[in-house]
Length: 324
Length: 250
Image (tube, rainbow over the protein chains, first blue to last red):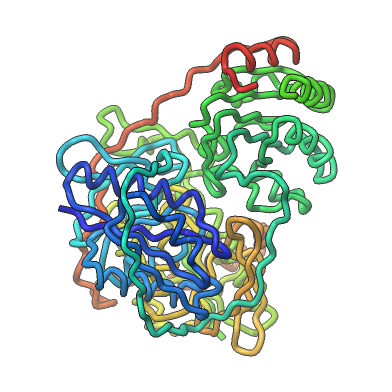
């Protein structure tokens, strides 16, 4: 019997959809070994988050709503999670593998003396619990087992369907905590302003590579294409590394975001293994590159060998026409 | 001031990774090894900070003596000395590596512990955070900018949705993201000098670590299912037609 604590990810009082992938992994563990799960939300002004967490079948929703948790910091958040584990008696802690979960859960694992499975992509077959996770930029899938009494897991959102509502109302329990201060203070947060969907949530992603020459040209080519598709924009590591105008949170790949949209359009990118690691589970992949031997064509469903500067305006116009 | 930089030897990030025929391990027959790229970012930043704040930069690595080439390369970049804790990579998980590095940190008492945000072999992204917790230090992970001022590190972090800046009191753990800097190439005289720089060797016993049981153990490896290459189309119109009728995304 598993007792699981799923740590919700929220920002400014909005639940992040990636949380529902972590719930799905919790349900998969429960389906295998029995038990149930609780949800935990940490922050300030969490009524909306608490409402959004209703209906997924949690035994309870633990809420640490406190002005001291307004901005995320690792030490106070890790302390709250450890406290929630003590209160709920959880032997599993799961969070989505975004920068929040990756930052805080190792500290929780250290507090609990638990082994941590990073970026879990699914459970292994068989009756005993074992976890699949990618290594070497996804070129190898390892099955790992955890030898400690407690287990901490980050779940890769792109690999789990979002949990669906279907449970009743879960009781909400306020977690009264004395906030731990730690040695860090929040200074500021610069949100990447964008009207577009977030990479993690987007059904369609258009992604550009270094073939787009420089930052200005990148935007000039990719913006109309993203507009036409209603897509999020991604980029390769080479682009965010060498074009200062392209922010790093757009990076798709081993060291950036891992995505699996319905359609991924790769423009002027060669398809380095580090990039493929972040997008090769997309449902349909389109590659446009003037080098017909580029590795991206080995994973693309549809390849167009062409100069992006010539064909992207045409593609954008025709996609726009097709969608209107 | 003293800065400790964790430095890991990994299989060349651009190598084609294959499993041995019996799938027991990665086929390392023809691969080359390099320093983990994020560790190089960490070391570069440590060296920059050291030149502005008169600090000693010390490399710490955990591995067998095959790591010497990468450690010497790090010394050539500008670290003063190195410490190698002799444990075979196959006998480590993130937690044991973290407990070892935390033990070295207790001996060395650095003001800053720098890590790469992840090693590109295991892709675990947890050792820096674990060390921070074991030492009770604050952490600033995924750093793209670091400034040291008045006993604090002011760190800009690459997070989902944007950039976050936090200030951490020293001593602290900082993990490097790729945009932090561009690691320097060592010059020939520095490479020569690095040959004479000391690499101290420690055993687990020297660090009073007796619990070497792995918390997370790899029990099987497999190659992911290969994606089949599709078709090439010869025009935008043909592509639009495929997206409409086959993929049904338009």
